[in-house]
Length: 288
Image (cartoon, rainbow, N blue to C red; front, side):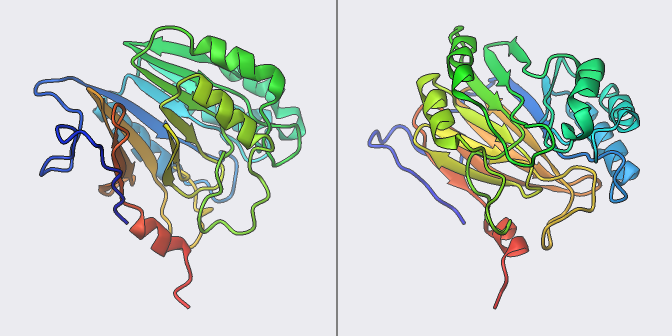
């Protein structure tokens, strides 16, 4: 599916290559987004993780985001295994948050031991990334909480060209993932807080299905599972690559050992966008 939101300004449109907001010679700021490793699961495939690490290091991203579910059950040996993988990623900043599987069995204690802060904040070359722990111990649903809305807005108050919010759980229902049970309980209030904070992009995982939306002035992008065979429908293990060039943003779905395909592209200024999700929808939708 290709969706375009057009601007009243004729000078602000996608060119023949489908690109908007780019300037000749502008540097590309890359962010690799991986999610749902599930180390310790019988469905975890080490070769997929090894390949993803190699590919990501070749891309030389400034930031790598890991949006949770590093483990299967939150046990310490699973965290230790995840740590050995993530330590091999070559990037300026590694941003990691726990997922619902990581908070099982008091696993959040081990998360802090191996990865430190559960709500990390980084600022790199005009890009601000604020990440929060959306988990509840031993529960699958997500929650942010009104006490954290002012804190989120404060973290984003620093001057920035581009603002990214990271959490494990999804703020919007993901197509093809069945009955909705695990969305962030206070998703509406959280989205309103992100609007006030002038967030450009939200990154999440949890459902193992990549997808993208535009809601008001915010783009929301979900990642699949990078290294397991816990797959919905005919989806494949994958991770996302975000490329920011000027005010133009591309998001790619990349398959370890295989190729890539664009999920969405948009202008951070005009909010024009095109998204390419027909294939994803076909992978998780019955043809009957």
